[in-house]
Length: 318
Image 1 (tube, rainbow, N blue to C red):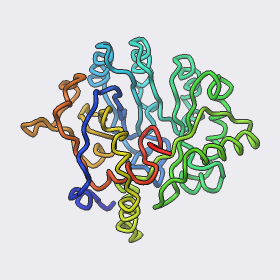
Image 2: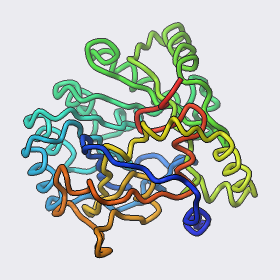
Image 3: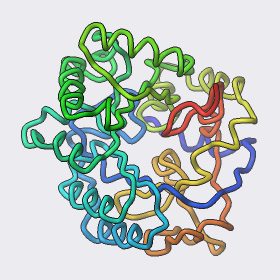
């Protein structure tokens, strides 16, 4: 796989000023039941990296301090970490809102038959990946049969109250090197098609720009389109999006407990460092620990600020 780190390090992207930390986003490991072309963490069935008990215990202790408002769980398929349920239960007990970034197909995998019920019982908000409402497009990006399994997963979630009393958010990624379409209009299309064809309801849809890193960045290089895509991102830069980028109030934590400004910096290997250059870990984390530390930026940051903007919560502007 082609490395893109050297292509992103030198940048003219402006500095980003942090706000108070509210969200801890945790990558529970790279193990996944899928291998998607756009995946920025190179997750797959053969990955073995998983967060261990030591880091889980540290996360629970943090949430018991009372300042964490949201726990955002990602992977891989975060549910494939055997400590997933213990962490979710502890977070909810501490009054923390939990998001599970679910690929939907995990809900029908052997051994995970009770997962949907568990998520509903603990009132976990689900961000569910569904890159299109058309079968051919989904299977092209994620593999044959993924669309049918995803629809079955959504119907199972609907039966448990998701899309009504429980929040169910769908996540859209473009098929290739282009910006996502307007989020509001796309959400309306998704709602109309999925309700008409499958009776599926969901709370909302978010669009996320494909980042030129890891597997997607390597594909761009292989196809000779990396520079063109970067020019697209830079050409669509909007300064107004800077005020809402996710790294202002979020810290990303990898499966080993290292701290990063965002999930993308995590995959680039750019940790949060103190004034002495030491990479920080969970043991260093407090609500104010990062206040005086500059956010590490690179050319990939244009992906968060291009057009309508992009974050783990979707578009930043209309």
